[in-house]
Length: 309
Image (cartoon, rainbow, N blue to C red):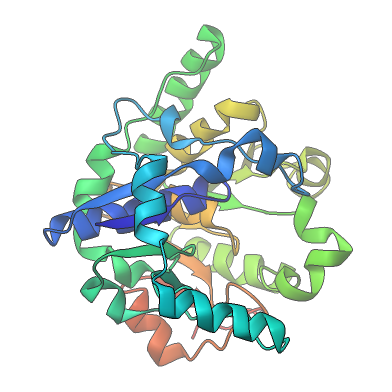
C-alpha cells in the first residue's frame, strides 16, 4: 500500500490528490492520510488549514485508517536500534525508510514506490499532465452558498466564455510577511505581470482582465479602469473555490507563484487557452528554462524581469 499525506492549502491538496489519481492509474493501492488536519496539530500552525478537497462534489478518494498508517510506518528491530544509537550520538535523526519525502522539483522514482508513506506538495505539472482531462472531470465545483452570488458567478463565467478574457492572480497577504518574502517575494513581480498582460494585449487589444486577489484595496488602486479590468472580490472563505471555477472559464490565465492559481489554469477546458506562470516558484529553486518547459509543457514562462523564456 501507498499512503499520501494531504497537507497545506487547497492548491497543494489538489496536487497531492492528482498524484494519488496518477498512482491509482498505474495500478497501485493508494490511500490518503488526513491526520495533518487534526485540530491538535492545526492549533500549533502559523496558518491553520482545513481539509478542502471535500468542497468538490462527490470527489472520490479512500482514507487510510490509523492502523494502516501505523503498520506501514512500523520499523523493524534493526531500524529501531540504529535510530536509538543515532539519537544517543546526537547524529542526524535516522529517517524511516518507509517515508518518502519530496526534496526536489520532480522525482521520477515516485512511480516505482510500493509500501511507502509519501509526503510533499508535488507542484510539478509533469507528474500528472497526462491525466489532466480526467482531473478536470473529477474536480466538480460546488455552488456558492449564497444564491445571489452563485447567480453573479454564473453571469461572469458566461461573459468570460464569450470574450477574450484573462485571469490575473495576485498573491500578496502572507507572501509579504517577513518570514516569507525571502523565499516567495519578488517572483511574481510588477514586471512579470506587465509582460504577461502585454502578451495578451498584443494578441488582442480588446482583452479583458479579471483580477483575483485577497488584497482588494491594492486591486482597486492599481486596476480601477472598469473598461479593462474586473475585480473579483466576492468569493471569500470556503467560497474562494469559486475563484478557481471562474479562472477556468478564461481564455488566458496569468498565475502567481501560487498553487491556487495553477489549478485555476489547469482546470481550464478551453481549446484556445494560454497558460502563463512565473519561471520560479521559490527563490531557493533552480529553474532552468529547458527543464521547466519540459515539466510545464505548453505553458508560457516569464521571469521576474518580465522576460518570456
